Length: 426
Image (cartoon, rainbow, N blue to C red; front, side, top):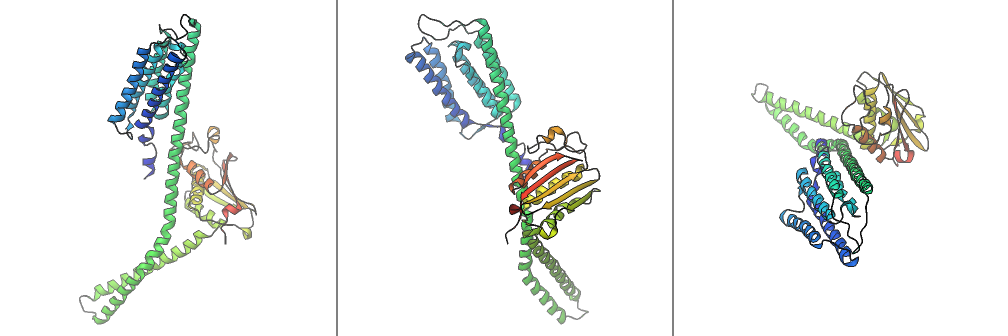
């Protein structure tokens, strides 16, 4: 799975049919219980035939959907809009014949809108909001009185009805907006965390390649030595004028070249693997900063603590990627220099990355840590999804680090670990 397939996939905004069917059965049960209690327990006058017909209609449509389509089906936005509009009309009709806006259950007309806002694209939810407002307006003109004791009625002044209309419209609109924002933020967070996992897997995969190189060199060593030995024996049997002599010499030279390549692989892998397993903090800083020194920006590493007491940190793929991303961002936005200050004592290990650029925009500074927040707005290099900083922050926090973002001469990021979290046990 790639990052492009994770971010923005349309399936994340599709409502599952089984979810809608279960909610509808809950609505059928609730409506039926309410009618029974009002008609037979409270003994209120109620248009039972109309109410029963509307409830049975909802139950029949729900049963048909349950029998016709698989429960795992994810509805297209247009299909979900059609079903939720039907639910809205059914509930509005039931409220219409039982008092309209004077019915205490009138605010429930916002439920289909909330469901749509939590699961559907914005334009479909806005369409359903408009339909809901029309239904609420129609309820204000219902000619049916609120079911009450025989011979008695509950008077509602026009001003009170207008206030109820306004309150229900506001409730529906606010609830729809809130559900939409919560759903979008949860979806973005889920996609960003999935992207974080993908990046971490890639970093771990690259770290594992060294071990694979060593294994390959070891396994290929014996057959390659056999090939070289046989080629040398053939060379002794052939004279310089033999037509196969040059071919055998080429075979010997190429086998020697292969042996040299495998020797370098073995040396590189062995040294790197040992280096990665038990890495001094200074080596970690050099590894993550070295790839960014060729872009015309000076990277100045300042060690503020004695190297004799230097911690030996884990070679953690998340730490390597996270620090590298923060340094890369600093280089991108610096004018001429990036300072990396390293300090440590018996309790903490701290790395401060500071550039001499424009710093974080005030609105971005308050939102750092959220996915899809561009690092610095208004900057010529700003753009993209703003996902890299979120991934870096998440990976570093998983390693036990605490991050602080602020503006000094430029943007400044402080990463702090407990020393026990950073060191490797001997």
